Amino acid sequence: MSFLSKLVILFLPVVALTVTAQLLVMPVSTASPEVMTVVIDAGHGGIDGGVSGVTSGVKESDINLDAAKRLKRMFKATGVNVVMTRETSAGLYGTLSSGFKVRDLSKRVEIAKEVNADVFVSVHMNKYSDPSRRGAQVFFAADNQKSEQLAECVQKSLNEMPSSVRECSALVGDYYVLNNAPCPAIICEYGFLSNPEDEKLLLDGDYLEKLSYAVFSGVIEYLSSF
Ligand SMILES: [Zn+2]
Image (cartoon, rainbow, N blue to C red; front, side, top):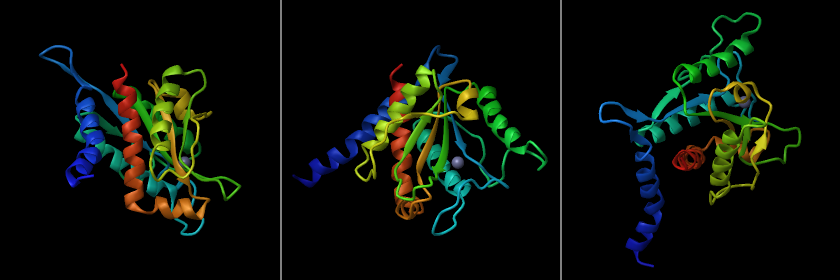
């Protein structure tokens, strides 16, 4: 295969996605173009670090933010409106008093409502009692067809990564942000910090970039289906 053909094959999906993504900026009238809004939610933050890496002790909240910022860059490059629930290491609960966790989660949902989000993507890292469990896992709320559709697009995209460590099915998850989001919503668990191999990959910027691109592509595929 010539170098040029390899280049074309390598970049075709990116070009196709970019073109598709540009179609998401749909002019409803010449005066007021309607742009899709994606809310990217870096899970945890502040006193709530989430789960910890089994070898390094890395905080889930830090990897979540790194991954969320990568997603932001990708969506912004396609002209999609991006709103982040947090862009610093701080949580969203305000003062650290009783009920802080509920306040933190409800603020994330509130943001999605305020900006009239089209899609809500919450980024997390997983943990399981069996340390051999690996792979990226997407969750959606029960009885929510659009969220299920979104979750399946993103899970498929993650499964199709050449470096995917395990093929998973999108699963129903009983989580506050999924049950209360005003739009199709998913939680993407990028991998297991309770597994040393997954942890090593999640600490590798190149791998996190690939995972983020797979999530981005899956969301774009979902948004393009309307
Ligand atoms: Zn989490």
